[in-house]
Length: 236
Length: 214
Image 1 (cartoon, rainbow over the protein chains, first blue to last red):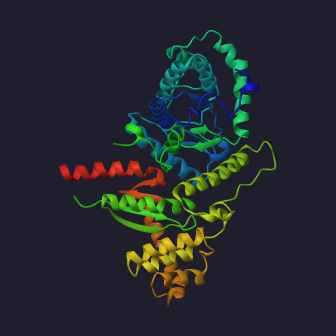
Image 2 (cartoon, one colour):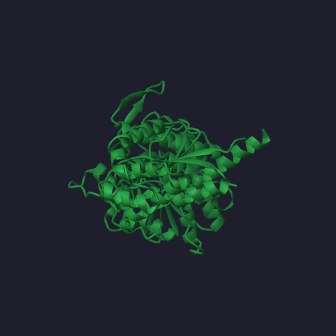
Image 3 (cartoon, helix red, strand yellow):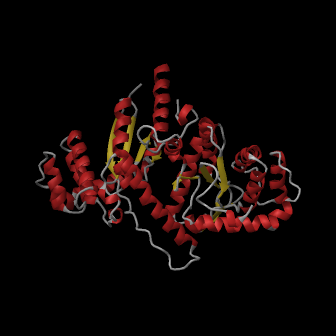
């Protein structure tokens, strides 16, 4: 991957989707987004976006019993975080997934270097990687910071991992860091993030609009709506 | 089974509330729900502030997010055919509490829900397209009278029981699980934002069919 060729706004594909393994909202956006792409017959340019959560939501760590061990969050930040998890959990349940709050704020850099590695080996490998990693991370069964775990996930996804360790410690990390800087400086700050036709949409609630745009803007523009897995992204 | 009841929280100064009123009403009417609407005072939006330091990550995050929110509100207002003039002219960041307008809603509700509904519509439009001040007694009294409700005594109400009523409502709302606008509360479960409406409709369908089966 060539950082000089990396453009946060442009792709050979009609849609760029930014995701972070540690975002519960990106987790529950994955399946409906893939379903939309399949229904429309388009390829997605999936890209990782490594959020710096402490910078805007404070930081916190849970002890083994799930109680807050340390926190730098205000009460308002806590209220938002707690609601976000409750919200994500109810939708995850609709998709058939369990979702447990994380015990700490993870650094998903390594998992995202794996993301780029898998992507280089094809759409199928990337999907298998994301389908493997996300559900496990969200039941506390995936150490996103452990090289052996990330490597095993790549292997499970069908990726050739020869050279991955060197890549993760060298060129891959450099590319990750520089691309993340470019994405942030472009004003793309949250996930899931949908970029198409020079527009950025933050949140899966924009999937109806994204679908409408990709489908040629036929009919009136839709409003925001969290997608279900019924035809057209509906609920029944 | 009895008709499900929905509690709806809104804030006149909240642009998301303005966009949410019509679709929430549509859901309520389509499903034949009972609803209770309450004004809920939140914090006004803050204008994007470009950080001084290039490495102020949190500051830049807030700047990008605030810039994005303004763009997002404007595009969905346009999609809905709402003029919402003040979405695009800096009016998103007016520093107002909206308490007087909130008390105006409660005052008109005392005359009947149809009056309160009309007051809500006029007030949202007057604030987001006109020059109404949500904290102005004169402006809110004008809106009260415009819907056909007597505004005599409203100033006294605002100074005394009006504020007490707002505070009591806020406490009850908090106990019921409400904390932001626009929200729908169903059996203590909060749905913040209009993006949940299709899912809320599905949940209500399931609830109502369980009631039929029972």
